[in-house]
Image (cartoon, rainbow, N blue to C red; front, side):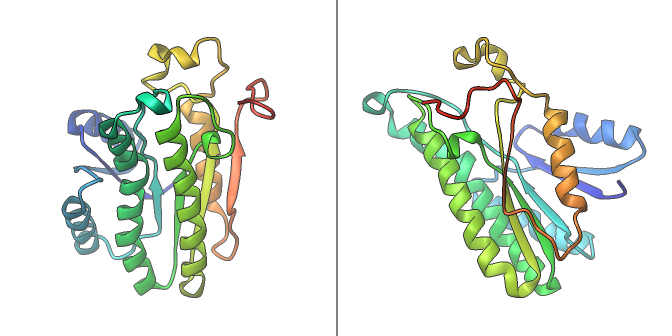
Length: 214
């Protein structure tokens, strides 16, 4: 679509393979290794982006930590790990992107939430709490960004066939979308006119149990 893509995560080898695929298709991609739950890393990344590129149009927060346990067996270590990946990392990226976008007086932030933010499941206290938090963060950013031309939206995907799902017992027999299905919708939102936003949206397969689940 002509965008310059910067992808950031902890595993540089996997990141670089994605960047190489984008480049092979004629696009531009830069892979940066960082732990997005560490503020110093995030600050450094966005300072680097500011020096290399004249404008930051879109931030897509697509992070998440997984792990399930009954509430009485949920360790603080698992809780903090999921919170770091699923809520702290999007907050930090939003904080530094917002600073740049405020200066530009325009920008778009897209948070990838989860249907778990709307309909919880057993044994998912940390993950569901973090995704609920991401939806709350979305609303505050949309409100605070309004006067600066910054919009923020949250997409809640249903089950998506990502790397972990084949080994996740919770996903056995559950209909799952492809990552490309979600990506198409993110791209649609990215293309919206600057004066238009989608605050919240749910995307899932028709067959997935959602209404009345839990």
